[in-house]
Length: 253
Image (cartoon, rainbow, N blue to C red; front, top):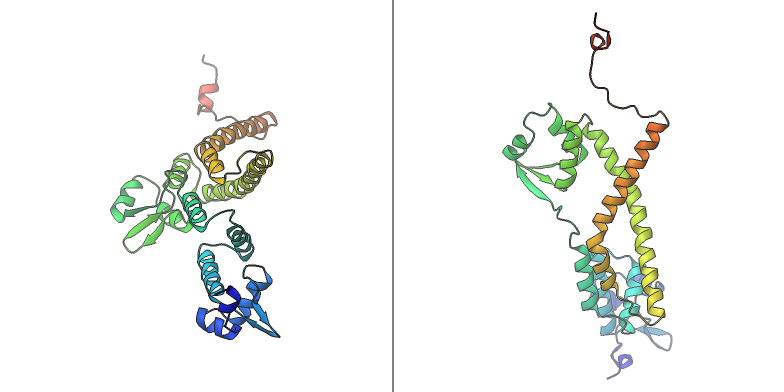
């Protein structure tokens, strides 16, 4: 039996069967994510393949893909450039944390012990900034590394709010850099493929994953050093004083 012979659903029947509204089905068609129906005269009919495609679209949307990305992926699936299993495996690997900075749950006593000797109000400031999230009698630390950084800065006189704003600045600029770098490397891989090499996204991931954190740390440290040196030379940054008082500066008799 051909696909045309199997196409027996009207759009309303397909909507009832799949749970996807008719207007959404038409939207998917207009975006190229759902194949066109079979035409018999002036009527359009859908088949089991359309039901399967709607189920796939729903799965991909649950994973955060937008309709344009879904259209591109199903086009690759239809022409055999990739398989759903390969794509899901690659996507799962990408979701694996690239660093050891994974969320932690700390009890009330563990948090109090961690903040022992710190100024009053620090716990509230950490919660307000989002570094800690109160959950019943526990605290969720989404990024232990960022919490450690904030506590280190606080111990050196930089308040949590300032540290949190610094994190936002970093995230904003590093997000742009990450997008540009990903595009840069992907274009290089595609150029290699056109020259007869392999266009392997998994190979790109394997190349970037072990060096990304080290590269960011080294380059950022260099840039921070350069920025501070420039501020010092321009008179916008003063060295820390030795702490001697006026009496120490007076000549002895």
